Length: 358
Image (cartoon, rainbow, N blue to C red; front, side, top):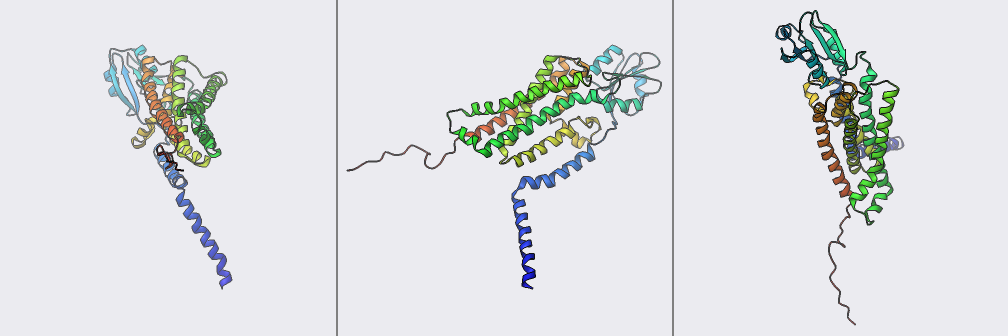
């Protein structure tokens, strides 16, 4: 009986040992428990393609009459009897609304923003009675046309967050950062030296992906190259900040990957890249407005597909700038703290002179 119980006892001890080790590794527990819950909430409340509320403006002489007869899906945000079809097109180009009904005689005309793919599809399934629909900015409702500007942001997010965090953590594991800490270099010099290569690589990736999207997928480019550069640079500062911050919170590359996944998943699912923000429940939609990828996608679609005005693209650009200052500033602060020399009892202050006696 003793011999048969010994293997069971050793197995029991091994199981207990693994549970204790797992309990100490809080990040792994959070990933195993928190990630399924997060995915359940995201897919339950955000994974919807059918839009039930389309922000709509009604313009033209008969605007008031036609607005009252619109189907419930059209959420009338503006009624302007003095505006015309040109004003409606401008409102769509500047993302003021998602659809415009031109009520300037019979039949009314429905103008839909094709850069909002699922919004346009929902609108075309519920065309106002007697109206003639027209899709702007993406007349064929081509998925690649809408996705390529978003994929630029996703690739930059992956390179800036995952690759940067792994690179910096690898140097910590190899002891390189500790060696740099004792060299006659300022922490800012080390931080910039470490981040600059990843910044340049991510910038190069952005140029390559943008060129490929324009040439291979025939995605239109209607806006300003200067605005594209401004959005790209600010977004790079944000994602590199995430990568550096993750590296300062991780002791190994495994931990860095775990934190990077927990950072990437909400941005992919809640930014409007896959699921339209308008279809999400209000309880999770507000999270999307806190994510940098959301505002980068808004800017990219406005620049690529619409040629939106500078005044329309300035608010999301300002939000990205604020995020860049906060996230990148926090990451640099954490990185400087990691490089700061650790005080010990021996170097806490100058030593008292010792009297030497013969």
